[in-house]
Image (cartoon, rainbow, N blue to C red; front, side):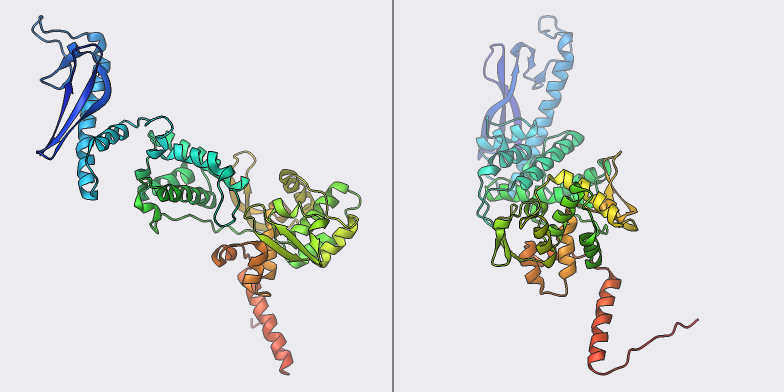
Length: 446
């Protein structure tokens, strides 16, 4: 049977308080608890600080002013005993080595203490996230053979903020072994309910947590095995994301913005984005030097992929407007602000289902809004994928948009059930015409 005792090795004030853990003859471990006490206030019989006045005046060394402090220490000593026993039982189940180092780590974990300077990331998750962020600019990614992108670093920093918020909410520091399905549930509820974030945003934070936790696992850190469980899933939102169909794009392209140089520039940047299928960081920086033999050749900023894109006739006309070059770049923020004006001027004022950030609550809200209010740089890649889906091989479209998996690509396709049905109807009508059938006209029965 395992036994635990607290012992002093000195009568000096202050003295270190030690813990002794024994299990039969095979285990006998002694290490410091980290607590410093005055030996004359220690009760060897009770193995606790004296917190009552002894009836024998000669033995009495209790100071009433110390009672709250001693009560707190005694509670922590009881807590430590229970934690050591619980950890020992778990270690027996998991087949861990029980030695002095194990006991030292258990004491650190019990009180959420930092370990040696610079090594706290070996126990706690937040220091590891900070380490990942610090090393990111010089860490080469296997897929791209390039350092981690600025966007990914920003996403990791945002995730760190949310993890810190969660730790404050639950009142404790997260350890690697806390990253289980219970954490997954609680963290999702915290983000979705307490912080009122939509499920897609919650899913992005879960994705980042999994990515960093899996990296920690590869480095030999004790991450809970449930991090790879299918139920440790990334949430997603079924909110309808808008896209611009070819008729709307043509309308935007032909609109006269010669009266407004600012909107003319943004409209042309939008056209470039819509017919290249790239992220704003890439399409706004395309220059004439990227055009070779009738194709646009770029290296994407996020993944470092080499992409070759045929030049759409709209882009040829845009280049003519700018003296054979592309429109000057604009900040992402200004583009997303001005492109809504473009949509409004063109007449994209009809109501559509979607979501946007409420300027007062700073939260994304679903509802019906004028379409132009929902236009941003994200619409370019989504429109390119949707407008070409079903007309070109999926792999061909993905080679240009840069999607790594077909599942990820399909998340960008925004064709409605009716639009799918219309495409099938048009196909059947063309086939019927080729085979000499007359057009079938249906009468509506009252």
